[in-house]
Each structure stands twice: as structure tokens, then as C-alpha cells.
Image (cartoon, rainbow, N blue to C red):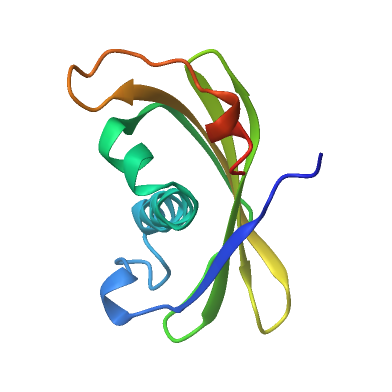
Length: 130
């Protein structure tokens, strides 16, 4: 089954620019995390949102090209795999004007019970959301 891709667009604000006049590397990570959170919030039921939280275990980011103030970017994410308590989510950030791939990233997430913060097995119900 092909994973569902969640995307949003943004315009690079002046506040995202670093001393080298391009987007600060940490902003790309923030945008990836935003995509993951929005995807979860859009697909999970209210019961799931109350019962579970996701914690980051690992991030990996490949920077392919720079983005600059005023550019429109598309941030996309999808769940590549889920097994046990862990889920691997992938991301791409591209510049809309020329479809240039700027960033490829992945995050390993761990599903936790919201009340006791202990790892929780990812059910088929959650896996099938994505």
C-alpha cells in the first residue's frame, strides 16, 4: 500500500534567514516536525490524540540546496514504515518556483502512552491512518 503524503506550503520569512543570508538549518527541521505534527493531528481520532504522544528517537537530514527569503516552499511527509513502537517518517522540502529538492530527511519516532509515557505498540488502526 502506498503511504499517504501530507504537504503544506510556506513562504520563507526574514526570521528564518541566518548570517549567511539563507534559511537556517534548524528551520528545515522545524518545518519537518510541523508537517509530522499536522499530519498526525489531521488523521488521528480524538481518542488517539488523548491516548498517545510521539517522541523523536533520531533525525537525519540531507541538505541539497539553500532556500532564501521570500521563496515558496513545499514541505511533504509520509510514514515509510511502522513496527513495534517505532515509526519511520520521511520528508522532502522543495522550492516551488523550480521544483528544486532542497532537503531530504527522516525521523524515527516512538509512540508513547500519554499518561505514563511508556512505549506503546503501534496498532493496525494507527498504522492504517497513514
